[in-house]
Amino acid sequence: MQISFSEAEFTSKKKQTRRDRLLADLESLVPWSALEAVIEPFYPKTDGKQGRPAMGLSRMLRMYLLQQVMGFSDEGVEDAIYDSAAIQLFMGIALGRDAVPDATTLLRFRHLLEEHDLTQQIFAVVNHQLANQGMYIKEGTVVDATIIAAP
Image (cartoon, rainbow, N blue to C red):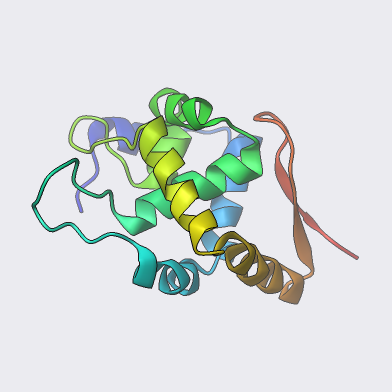
């Protein structure tokens, strides 16, 4: 995939923020394919019928984990995607060509996870992966959410 000028400019900026570091840590530490495998059997398939087309599972999972780690509301995480180039890059979204999942879509995704008791499985997989590397997730605010190496 070819990146846009704004994405290239963003990735070449000099200062790396704490948010940038958090997102890079999530990208490298979260076992994305294992989590998608847990959810995929329950995730709706795009079949071209009525209603909005389903968003990609990977994108929705990233949005959900961002919400959990950063303590965003449904509307807050949607706004953060529009506001932050770092989050757009993490989500794999280029605003000029990709749709941003809205708050209602995230709400439906969360309900799907809850309905099938998948949230506990997701966080067990993530925490196991992090524990194997001596780390854990500490929830914070938009400013200070971090992944911390545990002794």
